[in-house]
Image 1 (cartoon, rainbow, N blue to C red):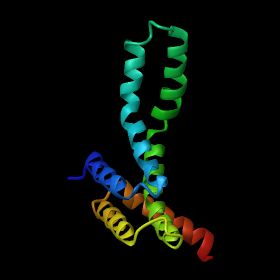
Image 2: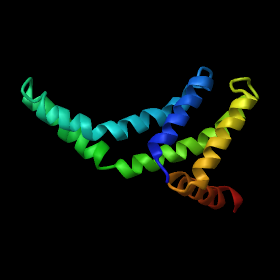
Image 3: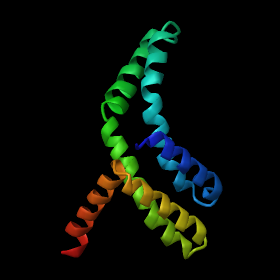
Image 4: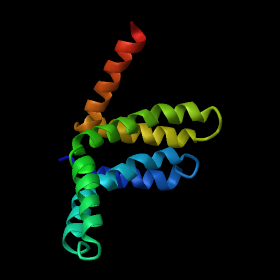
Length: 139
């Protein structure tokens, strides 16, 4: 059984240990939080906060949440998975300028490897990145 939220907890643990040098590691966490809280935030705005300024709340709720975040939820999820894979390469690159630790790089690669073996979005993200590399670099 694969649960994205459980793996995000593992990712959060990793970021707390090794994230002080690389703020790039926080991007997938922020994206996951937006994806998980978008429905709840829209429901909260529509039910409880709409009496404060109905036009402003309705505009924000409709334009920002419904039209952008909720409508593009799968695209944002795919982008989050791709960013997680790109961070693997980033950690190796910044290791040469002492912005990451070798132990952190190995731990992160193992975490991404487990996510890849469990299937899901990470496997698809690796396939998309491999296809882009084949098309643009290997020619």
